[in-house]
Image (cartoon, rainbow, N blue to C red; front, side):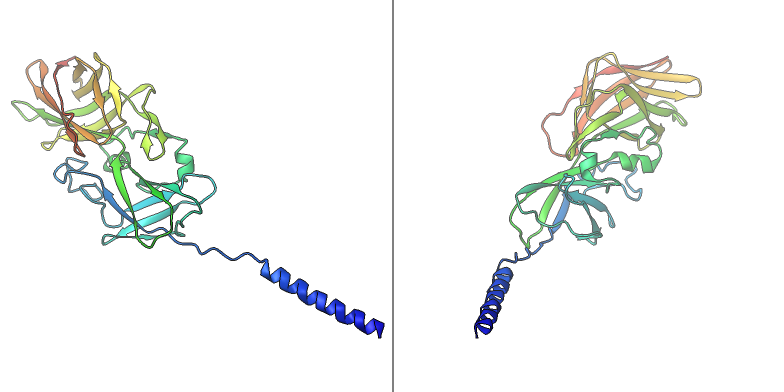
Length: 297
């Protein structure tokens, strides 16, 4: 009889132990994907980001059909995701980005990245040197956005994008059409570092960007935001051995999200400088006009 009692007590103990173990199992926390909408902040429709705006893939005042954006938290502990524009609706093409346990910031970059945001945020940005090639021009026009996320919600998070570079437009005019003249921008920094979804102030050595040959619509380049000092040879306009150059008479500050228009006129031995108009991709009151000369070498 004593042996039987011991067996009964042992069985009851095992039952209690089983119940206790089951009660302590943690509950799974439901993962809630973050939904997004995206817009280009205060971009004036008539400006666009290329003089020849009809070219496929060039941004105007909205993202083109099929545009893809990389979104992520900018850390090494979570994977980025990609969202794609289909008829104005943004949906994931990868595993969704879920709401985190704590409040944090989402970083978004367009065009979509080929490496993680966490790596890009600590790496350099290089301006494409030959922007007469339309694919290089499109790569130069990088847009960035950030958004704070906290409590999971079914409402989409709005990503308000800004151009992180500056736009330069060069117009040439003469008594005869200046065909085959090649326009280059010189003495500018081509390398800088990312700072989240924007770029840091550039302090790297100068280089040059090829805008392309004369066009009646003008030629355009996208450059790193920076300040160019006075007495800098900023433009070279050439045809064969014939070359003209524009030297700044005062410093010029190129700001992210703004366009700067240079109107240059050919004369017998030099190009007289008309004006530089600073117009914004987004609204700003700080417009200015800068004077100078572009002289034959």
